[in-house]
Length: 306
Image 1 (cartoon, rainbow, N blue to C red):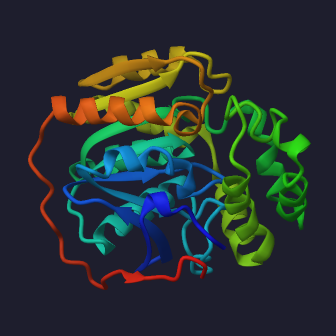
Image 2: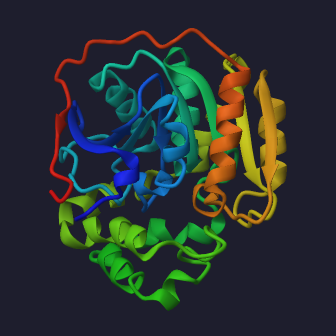
């Protein structure tokens, strides 16, 4: 499957839970982009180019349904397990710390990292994402049921291939305001349609999603003292702006910036504006450069069509 060249070279590392493919572009202070459920790193394809001139932009495909390589059969793919996998990924690519930029489910995972491994985060950037009592949004609670039905995720993936289905609120309709590039949608759907083990990974995560994770994390967020940027869509239908305002009050060092003409997927709807806001934030909040950590097993390049 071809992938977007704007994200850089496709590479692969192994974590204790299984292999992770990622793209990397640029040099300098590292930024790691964290996507959500049923998509992959291609979500950030229009954000990374504007930042890679000055930063090392790393975009992993986490085991959330749009990943090409399945994890180990015994991998913990609960939200807490995903947070540990993200930390293990940082270890594998040799990063002691990084700025995390997250969206949707990736924001919940990043909050869990912030409270369990705060020393690994230089700055935290959250775009519209699960938090507090929203995990998942009520509209997507059906995924927990679908994940428990044999063949349910396969049928869902096949139906989501239809453009009319993609425009429905139950699919991408309330996530991206103007639709999503067909090539990106294909990269999100095809791994799960091709590989039963990928669907197994997705089901494992969906079955464990619960607001108890984000509610418990929220109790500890006041102890996270790194700079936080919240970039929220005023028109978001899944994660209301009031939740961003609440997050801004919860973190001890947070700034809230709102964007217009966007839904949840700000990286899709307003990528250039998002990149500019992130760059301004990093420039305004300089921190000690991340120290390299020697990876146990270095990354290896992967054919972009592997």
